[in-house]
Length: 307
Ligand code: GLU
Image (cartoon, rainbow, N blue to C red):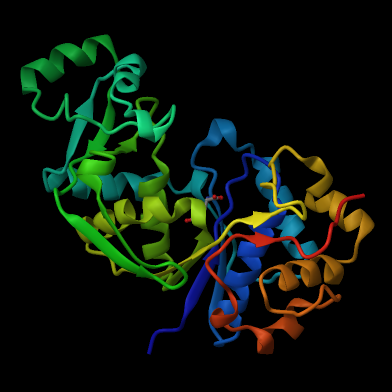
């Protein structure tokens, strides 16, 4: 039987915030309570936005909070060759095409209900001929998109239950590699989870809607599908969203004022693992962990940790 393998995969474009730590805690407890493996991956695929010291800081923060992991952390910035191989196999299957659309053109595809940055790609470049492509390549570098199926893609999330999306309708063919050569998050995550043998993905609710894209990529690449659990949002004591820019809640600030046990106790009470925010270690939470204690509604911080 394969070992349960979970992971935490932060993006070092900023510091860890309490919501990230809560996800890490649940991901860690979920596998440790079943004797599973826990991995850490620094998602710095977008190198210009993710400086190395920021990733190193996250590793220190995780250690300071008492987390442990079973293998050396992976850094996406060191794994481009693996994403390249995956791209080759998708391209060989005829599933990749270059897209020369400008930002303005993409913007014009935005649907009013999708907000500013989101759009449904209209396949403008899907039927370019080899000649068109040769001409356009002289003007600009293309991004590379995955041809997605016109199909309802479903999975059962451990927290939110069944989730279904038709990617073609709701997002369109999506970018695997940007025009500057950097690989996209969807591709990197799918390759890394598969190659690391991850069987369980625990992460924030904000990524729930990206999961069908990852399922399609797994299928195209012949990878197994892990289980998914998306964690509801953690709100401040006043019910407002925790802002990433709110440095009062950065891990080093928190640890200068509270013990790690206090911080973990507040998080454990916020998600229903403890009745009250009492200091607790990660180890002591292992026998208390149960997915059934977590609800689907947003959670509120059980006590303020602000100065
Ligand atoms: N890197 C993503 C984040 O920090 C998480 C991706 C994942 O867990 O799949 O939000």
